[in-house]
Length: 147
Image (cartoon, rainbow, N blue to C red; front, side):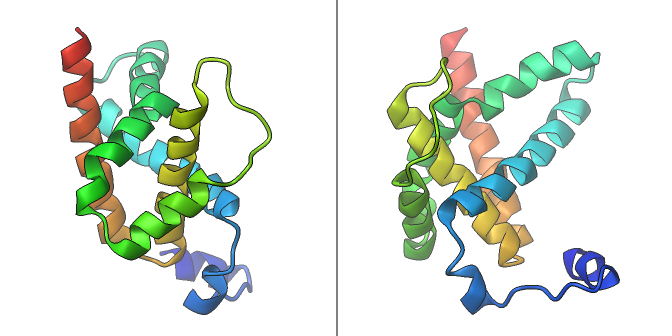
């Protein structure tokens, strides 16, 4: 699908070798959007409701603390390459930290988004789905513990 879209615009997709040299913050940039689409699809189909309700539910999954919890919960299920991408993303200096996130969570969330973006650019959609499914389960469990 992505290849067809880029080709229709006359753009050649980057090779895996070129993708390895992209900044982890660029991975996180696209990973944030990809993860958001999966979460929105999930909550629309599981919870329904109006846009305001959907937004409130979505924030439980996309906030830095939730993504950091997902990373820690997935740690032993990730390959060395995947963990390396997370660490590269986590260690990048980004502009600022959102006021409602602590620095450690924000950095791990950036690492998580970097992993999703890297996998997307590498065209590993099945692996993205596996990781997002596990992340959702981890975050849902954490949410139940807080209720």
